[in-house]
Image (cartoon, rainbow, N blue to C red; front, side, top):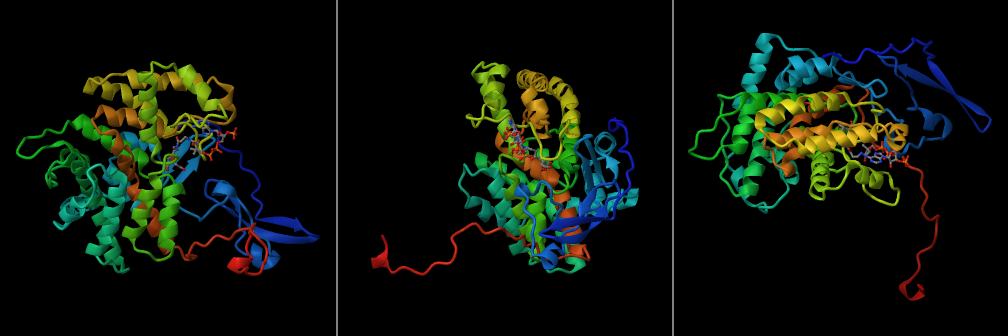
Length: 439
Ligand code: SDX
């Protein structure tokens, strides 16, 4: 599969500066032009030259940085990691190879990939003291805060200094240990003993075995399930300046170490408007199935401004056309369901919701299409991942992207601590009132 061929954007004359007129004065502002023709007005000197700042609720119009990792064209539904279309990577690559690509910037040679895989494999074990850590957590703890806390705790086991070698070792430890932490969080929630990682299995097979094997029982990993998981993680591996990646960059900009920054990213991803949406989508589909409610009725509520219901898995800040990841996942669903013998009821409901929504002016006029979360849960459920682990799966996939952005930010010659400004709208100056004078 390759990305949709649509007419390339016409090359327009790229002006190199913009002029702001305000209060009888003019301010020339430089314009940066990206390799894909995107343009940004550089306001780095705006306040010192004019006393003005800009305001951008939710940063929908604000570039936080210049990056070479991932390119998204939301209008044309294009997603590329280091220039490679997501469709080709999903079809021909593996998650560890994509992780190497995102972090190093180039596809690895055979030897480089073997060495990267070997290093990641032999660091999957957690320090045995983690047993006391997990033992202290309530049984019904959601695995996302458990993972965020465990990743933060890695900084207590490895007092990471900032040398290049120590940072490189932290990168390997995180890629190697997050699947172990995730599976451990799940086993803890079941009250089952942990399954130690095996050095004889590939990345996804090792994770599946740690999740579903039980002690003293043989466990066979279905290669098709392992491959489906590998593709799901490729699709989640990066997405430029999304909420959780921006969180990792912000925390890392204070010179907090990589473990602390990734732990913050996991917490940001948990939100239902971000990575938590995949769990909400399945719960939404199950709610429609259980109530024998029609897709039409549900969509009526999702469009009602007085109803907080949203069509979860639909809409995106950047994609105003089909999220290419959703298209790939939609194609994957029937084969996985057929192999696993799972009911297609939730998939049928999801496809019915999509069919109706994409004919509905409310959704079409707002550019609301399925995003990566709309179909991912159907596959996770079919391969046996419990619903409260869905967002953990998203975090496992997104880890290399978070790491790549943290490294890029720290190596940026213009690196500085993130510190946005504000427009104050509170009380103007007033004098303190003694208690007995207050009304
Ligand atoms: C991810 O940023 C990334 O790249 C994220 C991500 C990644 O890989 O990291 O792609 C992963 O987070 C995907 C998004 C998962 N979240 C959901 O599926 C939750 C449901 N979607 C929405 O909450 C919403 O679409 C967002 C949060 C995704 C985007 O919100 P925006 O850009 O702030 O848009 P908005 O809330 O201002 O909505 C614009 C309009 C509003 O209506 P009006 O005020 O114009 O009348 O569209 C409506 C919204 O009410 N709208 C929806 C809707 N999403 C937006 N109405 C019903 N159902 C929805 N899902």
